[in-house]
Image 1 (tube, rainbow, N blue to C red):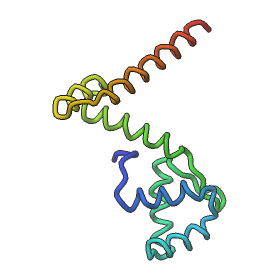
Image 2: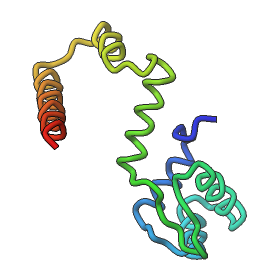
Image 3: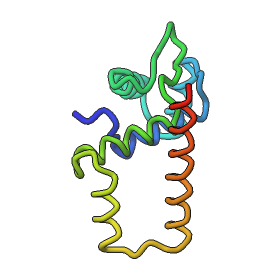
Length: 127
């Protein structure tokens, strides 16, 4: 099982938690009933599933995120690269850009990201 691959309803459920967290599990049941028409057991089953993947934790009835939405998306990206491109960002970019030309703006953004990364590496090398 891929821990960072969510089905459509799992993603909607996760988004609901991220918007409200920390949220009491009883309140989460009410929110899910209103948003999705779920029964209490469905909410707890879904919560358990995402807690087992270490995305959320139910700590004494209080549901909290173990990772932010941004951290989760980064993990999804890493998993995608690993599963499909041997973990290689250059191989992914080559495959992507062979079907769709990158705009000048996208190229500039990539260059900026690389420059910022290089600056970070230089800063940590000095420590």
